[in-house]
Image (cartoon, rainbow, N blue to C red; front, side, top):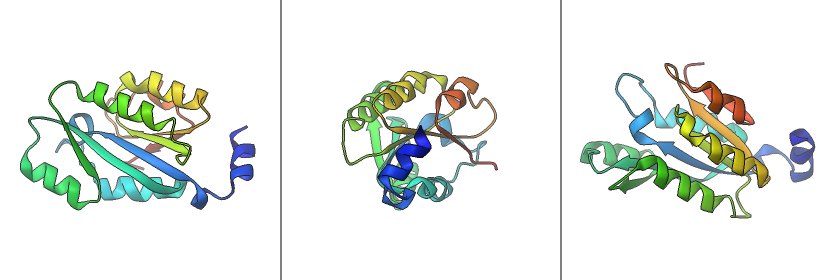
Length: 149
């Protein structure tokens, strides 16, 4: 069904992607996640129209600057990062100009988000890395990108 949808909508280059990054989960030194690599991997699915990294109030100024310099919008939230990301991504599902919702996380908490996006006709992409890359998250998404591959 997804393949049929792609043919109707045209090449992936004609598609628009919204990317939401779970900063506290992914931007850890031990994981070595490179946001430029995330962008390059997602560009295979279409043009990135929205690129946001959600971080908590403890994010350093240096990290916020690095995120911004890599072309992402830094979203600082004083409370639960997962909730803020999910609310923003859910609102974006209703944007007719967005074809794909990409979540960059290892956290299974975003499974309902991906399920809802699919129900609304959006292609879903999850980008993550081991260790602890949620099997539930990977099994829910239409496309899975492992940054270490």
